[in-house]
Image 1 (cartoon, rainbow, N blue to C red):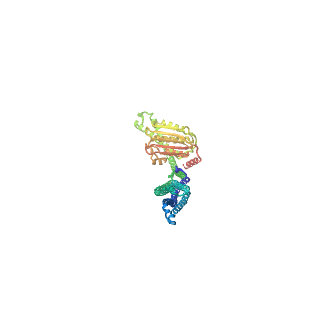
Image 2 (cartoon, helix red, strand yellow):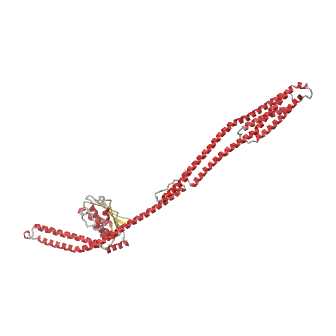
Image 3 (cartoon, rainbow, N blue to C red):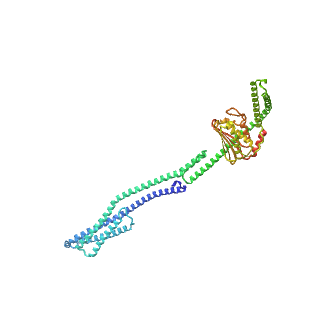
Length: 552
């Protein structure tokens, strides 16, 4: 509960506990001093009262002895009258009466002083003598003395009867003083056990207060260490870790106070810094990747331009001889065809030679036209026409290409699946993009087995249109991917192909400002070609296309 309070509350609680410790120890000390003072006052008071009590008992005994001696003298009155006049024994009775009166007067004075001393004490219970018992016993002593004095005032003449009844009152007074004296001395005797018990009680109380204070202090120190010192240390260590570069470290105090708010602020600052650092790293990596891609594109474009210039010269030089060979083979074929109408017995050649001539001339013509087709592709590669763009539905274009390829005999046993998300309109050259899609689809079909499949996906987002051709065929290695768009590079399984199809495709896509990215997890794991085209050509795309044409 206290863990999630503020530091101010924790400090107030700590000061309260510390104050409680001080008050507890002060209470124990002051209470012990108070008990000691009360005991000292009680002992001092009793030291003043005990002489009064002893004097009361002594004068009561003196009055009773004087009365006894007077009674004995009175009983010997006849013998006293026979003594000569002026004998000292005659004054004995008078002397005893004076002694009695003196003792009675002293008794009264001491009793009054003793009563005043007892009445001047506070109403608190004495540690040595019970005040109530003392007061009651003192009242009994005064009552006995007042009864004695009342009897004396009633009997003006002293005779034998008077001495006898006076002795009864004196015996009662002596008994009361003896009881009072015994009560005082008994209480003083019992005070030892009482004081010893109180000493043990207050010693235990002092130990209890001390142990309680130590326990509270230990709890206070533990609380300060766990609620204040330890969170500060955790915050400091976490800050040092973050400052040392460990940005994944988070500070968790779990106290819910100002330190926890500071730790949360530190964590938020670390998160923002880490996100900014990750963003900067992402930007740097993206820029590095773009630089690498642009560098590779520039190198490829330079290679394409160089190869195109070379191909244009080579194609131009061999195109005319190939045309002559093709025309010559056609002329010979027409002459051999004329021989077909002549009877076999009139021919200059036999039938076997005639069939051989027909077959070889046909082969020469086909290969000549095939070479001519290659040279035409070289010329097309070297001089791509200016890109003329028009709004084109890429979905319809892809469907037309897939429908056309599906009718080819060698591809009929292979599945071509399309996934098209409605119409996707982009401003492109439809003939060139048709050539690109045809090239990608035929390459994918060439890489799969007879039971393989090719997926063609057309979709568009807010920035670009995408055509994805994916197959489950032979796949590509990283080395093949790196050289995939280089001229004359081919890795077809049947060994055919000129290696110019993807080069021309890549050049067309570059002129349109798009991108063609190959993906493959390895050989035998299929491949994926992602074609991206902008919806509208930018000025940079048009200028780059012009530069490519000029370089070619």
